[in-house]
Amino acid sequence: MNRIGSVLLGLASALAYGLLYAPVVVMVLFSFNAPRGRFNLVWQGFTLENWRQPLRDAALSEAFLTSLGLALAATLLAVLLGGLMALALERARFRGRRSIELLLALPLTNPEIVLATALLNLFVGVDLPRGPLTLLLSHSLFCLSYAALTLKAQLAGFDSTLELAAQDLGAPPLQAFRRVTLPLLVPGLLAAALLSFSLSFDDYVVSSFTAGEIVTLPLYLAGAFQREISPQIQVLSSLVLLVSAALLALASPFRQGRP
Amino acid sequence: MRRQPTPWREPRRPGGQRRLWPLWLLAPGLLWLLGLYVLPLLALVPLSLSQPLSRFGLETVFTGRVANYLEVLQAYGPILARSGGYAVVATALGLLLAYPLACVIRFRGGRWQPLLIGLVVLPSLSSYLVRAIAWTSLLGDQGPVLALVSALGLTGPLDALGVLRDGRLLNTATAVIIGLTNNLLPFLVLPLVVAMERIDPRLLEAAADLHAAPWRCFAQVVWPLSRPGLAAGILLSLIPAAGDLVNPLILGGPNERMIANTIENLLLVQMQAPRAAALTLVLMALITVAVLLQLRGRGLEELPLP
Image (cartoon, rainbow over all chains, first blue to last red; front, side):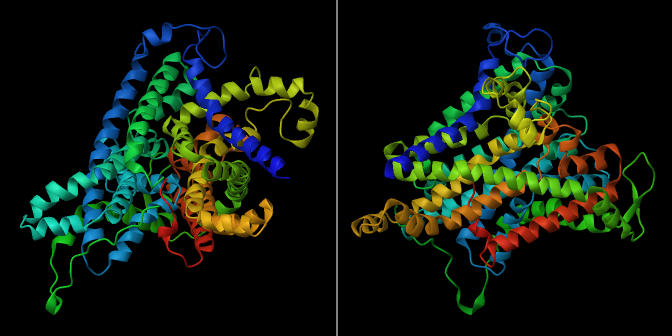
């Protein structure tokens, strides 16, 4: 009985990892494919050629850089605004704290398509032409909730008597914040930034409604699916995965106790 | 697990004096949330009761046209039902894999636990569009999945069951559901692992000491205590799955379009902003009802972050 249970558990887990990694393995594998024709979707033969020229596909590289810049800017904005909100929510007493926390969690309870529709109609309504600005506003908004809630959890978790001690020892509030609170916040900031960055970098739904003429990487990929799938797509995606894995490995020691 | 210290809060001041600093810290973020989320959502209500001014622009005029809702429900009711159906099937399939995996990570993981959790998170850091495109290679006519199916002689039976369509997998509901399941798996596993982390190992030891069979130990200790994680995981999977745009676009055909594809088409192709707004509000209402039913009085903070 016990043994059958163990076997079943192991089998289901192996299937789960298999399902999670099947497309990832295919992605990495096809970065080494030498495709015939425009669509790198059928295995033909092994080559290293694609990795020698990861930026050969100019339109793809441009979309990649656009997404990189957008994700960095959106992350900066979201972590800044979210960090300030988290600080106020965790450290101050005031009426309406619960309602603001609810407001922060609200965007997480609806699919992205709802936000996308609302934002597009807002931009049309106030006559703001869709482009870099509308993209940045939209991305910083959906990252804001995640950043603020992650940082709030981090602030709630650490020993705040340290801040009191700094103040007792005569440190002015700003200095106490800079020397004590900020260093303790670093793991949370890192986690919030990573989360925001990956959300923005990978966003398709909101971008497709608010980008106008700008082509982000996911928008380019969706278009490429109709036109041409160059192997550089898989090369760049594999590179992103490699960097993500490294960052995840670096960040995980900081996040112990909060999986 | 380490006990969490009580966070320090600004002490109450005598005489009910309030300092203004929290307001200044909150102001920019609140401006964002109100201006870019609450306001545009509220603005969808009058928009959903309007009519387009022309066939080529998104300009509208308010006419109080309630018929938009009836028309939308009539025309897209089946697509709404389909989206809900795909999301439920994908979540159910995901649970069949995620629950055992969470058990293995929590109870058999040992010192490998952080690595096993990291391996669950990692795939979601790669582009979900590229993953959907990779599925087209796996599920395509020359792909390994169909080769395996035909080698096992299952093409006929699976075709009869409706899993395949004319011996193909791409552009079927099966392909869309596989893509959705792949995307939502981490959102099921992580809350379950968090909930199981909270189970005191002494409870399991006590059950074993009292000669409870493993299955009773599971049924009376692990299962009831993992319920909060189960509820959170189901919500975190169902919501994005029901509103997914990418998997039906890439893995499905015209018969597998989901509600997000319909809204996108209404808004960006047909330029029917009022109907798109009405459909969005219907979707939002349905999901809000589902969330409220699922939470039943518990707060939103029950939702763990990914």
